Image (tube, rainbow, N blue to C red; front, side, top):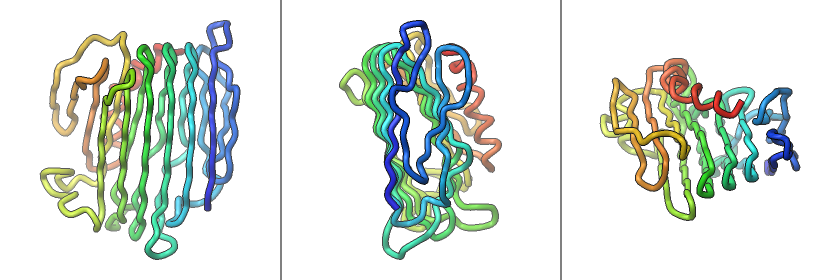
Length: 248
């Protein structure tokens, strides 16, 4: 299955945001939900199970100057096996212009047994843009070994590299569960925050949560591992909630 979706947000000239374009194809269906304040909220609604091996899904997001968008998913994305010797792909491309804000806050990616999935995200931020970007991976459904999943995240700020991050789990990634990667934890995630108004933070580690300031821009990366999806979300939500109130 191939599907393409596109979201374009623009400032409405009255302190709010309008969606100039919102379209998608099954299973990438986009739905705006009612709200108030500067930001608009859009949910990605899965119109079919998966992704299944062989699926090719693509989402483009363009946030104009002064616009603010939150993107959520209604449920976890469960990568499933399908045709042999092929992978499923989910590619997200986002551009955020000066003064714009994008909050990408999907539910978890679950790497079900037997899957072969590639998730690729590329984000281009202008100077003065703001970004909250959350990625979470659950290694297998309850009681099962995970399939193969690779998550690539690439973010540029003001035309320069800000973040290059890759994670591979499953049978095709030797050592993924070892002490140098997940240390046996079945859940892992990261939260990237880019905001010129936030003071510079120092690096810190508390339990399985690490805070890492980035050299390429006004940005901080949090990474965490956990015993389950709920605990992982608790770790990252502590950091994200104060940021969302700034764009209400």
